Length: 268
Image 1 (tube, rainbow, N blue to C red):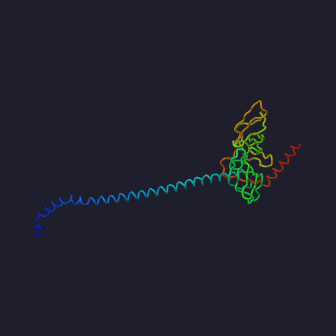
Image 2 (tube, one colour):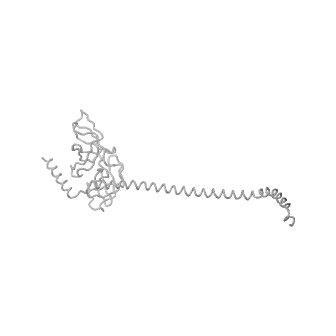
Image 3 (cartoon, helix red, strand yellow):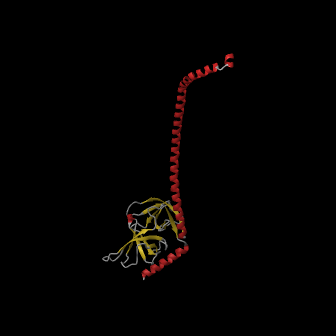
């Protein structure tokens, strides 16, 4: 101890021994270091796999919610458009949803979720969407009603041109989703792009409702009448909500007077 205290001889020996022992210590620590590294690596990999699985699940949930939000946004847009349409109509209205669509090409009909449980729904009642006339009620059941679309081959809609007031009858063409204006002479002033609205004739639809737009005019001199094809203003193949319309008392009186006048004129 005295020698170690007074001289550096022992320190030199200790340093030499340290140099010899260091590699042995390093080699002895290798298994522990490898084990620790392996344990950390496997734990980290397992943790990452769990995190990835969790994130994948959350991503799927968020994507599903996004789809729902997108549908809700589109539905809100449709309802806002219906609200604008109802303000334009200015009558008593009721929103109904489509339950089913008849796919028969010769029967253009839909079923809505309103029936006799709703007050005052009646046969012949007009229905429309945010863009224009869709059709009219033909059957009323306790909880549902059936409506015939204006494209049904058995449906006839009195219309008139906004450009010049010419009146015509628009008949449905079935599965094509179009209308045809019948019995128009070849010299009739009707053009592609003319906007058509309900004329109020026939005492079913009030005047002024958007009905269709002329998309084709074919004049054949060998035929007495022109072929005029129109596309409905309503989105018949897309709308999922419709408006049931009640005519106000004032409008009903006007329609009744017009119907009486038309009937008397026809009789004369």
